[in-house]
Length: 135
Image (tube, rainbow, N blue to C red; front, side, top):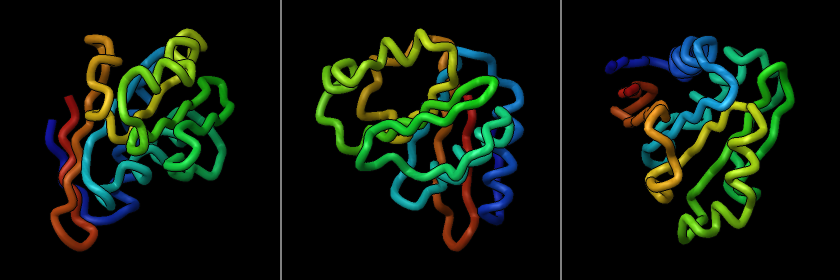
């Protein structure tokens, strides 16, 4: 599915719509360049999951945890050098905890995702316009 959004609010709304459909244990693997809208999309996921928190990019912490009926684990793989580093921080433990894992820069750790992973590719088309490809 391809969606074009014309504002940050629309990108958030598309994340919210997806978030409402996710079950515990779901993984959303996002890919896109700097400023493509990955964190905005994750804000929407949080809203859809009923997580009431200020969502920020975990670039320096690798993962931010947000409690909720279905918790949200927001990962940023940008600084990881290998999949081994992901497992060193407890990836398997996060998968077992029954939350939703939203993963920015997922292309850095492609072997970590099971077949049922939801993939979201975000492209900045200029200004506030984004192309979202969800599969």
